[in-house]
Image (tube, rainbow, N blue to C red; front, top):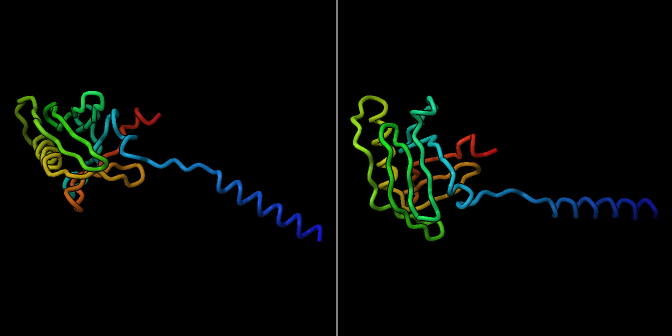
Length: 146
């Protein structure tokens, strides 16, 4: 009888501990106001390069603006966020001439932004989607995750 009560007490304690355990779940907000790095643009993996040449994307929540580096030029624009639905507008960029990999990255970055309608979280990745199709995957820059 004592063993049954002891066993029931242990099971109850274990259930209580497991139910109180907090899980960190990412939300769209956890990716805002941070430097994001692309890991995929339009189905093509983005190789980690020298951090000076790596494209970036930042959502500035106070101003409802975006900025970043496309792989060749700095860019900026506006965004509107309603839940997970996003609209980018008035995107502009500096006018540096691009050739090679920088030009390719820039085209892919702007194409992804142009076609994005929805933001979705998948673990530690922010996905940019055009309806159901993933057009970009971004992670928070390592220096910002500390």
